[in-house]
Image (cartoon, rainbow, N blue to C red; front, side, top):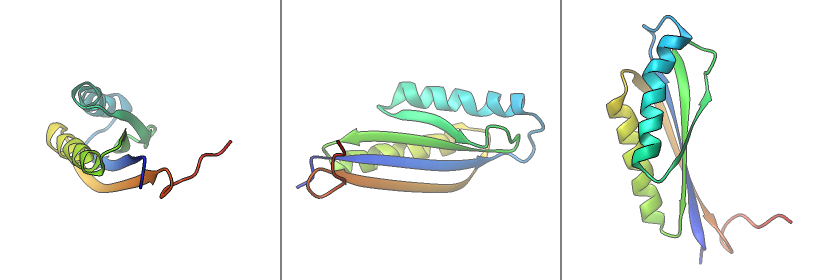
Length: 107
């Protein structure tokens, strides 16, 4: 039986009409900060930081309840899609079990 589950969500957002990094940050950063405040998640801007028209947002959470991890990541994906003035181009969710049925500790 698994001790717990780690869930990771990555979402690529695109905004081809944006002409500067400053403008893109003004669109993406508030959504990331509100997501952190609203849900028990770790959230980071992962890729596309030097591109003005796209970015990858990463979200992670951990729990002993698989369903909770799955639902929390789904709520985060829905929130990102709904709250930002951009288009979600792709989304990937991965949930990994911890313990005897999952990755082993490395000492």
